[in-house]
Image (spheres, rainbow, N blue to C red):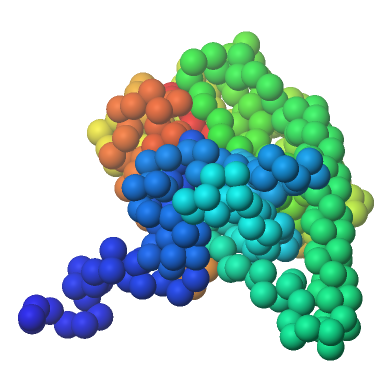
Length: 415
């Protein structure tokens, strides 16, 4: 017997645990091929392991060809496809899915099931396997006990009917969500910069909505050409909330700062103007922003922050400088706006500037300074990568595998 403590994960035989799981459980590849099934699955399905593992799901369990109204296979395929596309668990309504009797080709048995499908995510956040768990509920649907079971038959038929209605309603809601997502994508494309011609190959941007959002969020970024590409404004900001309402506020603030940056003497004055504007925009409460003016001719970065996490400057030698010398409250924090602080630093060719929103560095039950330190370490280690590769590496290392519960924007600029 092992001397390792019982709570040591390495001492647990997970293969044995899987086989002993109650209920029918199978692992499917993204191509819907059985990778493994537990003993209860084989027993309830009346199949041998070699008849299932390594075979395509719907070759093993096709629809009953004698039932022209059969929808079990189509419904299950749609559920599994949703899990693959969203990376989220999908619980299905009660399903009738007939099963061919083992050893009796052409003989089909009426069966009822309650399925649930869940993703197994890899280190890159993509679905590597699907967990397909099924509870058979045939006995709930079949009549129990002869003539006295008429009331049971009615109740169980009603249960089945309501479950199918619920499934149809869920499908309509998914279609409505898909339409909302199309609107959201169009809104995002209209509100955020679509090119980085200002900095050509020098910049990379990443935009990740929170898990479950409509693919738009209140985070934003902007790159503004101030003087023929030799002086550039780079900004990021964060509006509280997700979805279309937050995105609408985000668009207003981003446009206002973009315009203010073109006429302001420096980033502090640009944020002064934006703060005054935020006071008259519904939904801009507690919004934050940071803006930097990069002067390539003089090798300087002037910056100002309105309650936003500090930009990070990675010098060519690997030293990381936190640009936190000009931090002020959020945009609408003061009833009577005051001039905001401004600071400057220098850089040499080959340095890297990173601006980001708090979704990249904040974690529940963790101090934000821990996340900022984690970001600084990742930027330093990957500083020699091109901006696009560097941005991907930072997101991979800092965001949770399944995505963040907060929106994330990231801008990487090679100086």
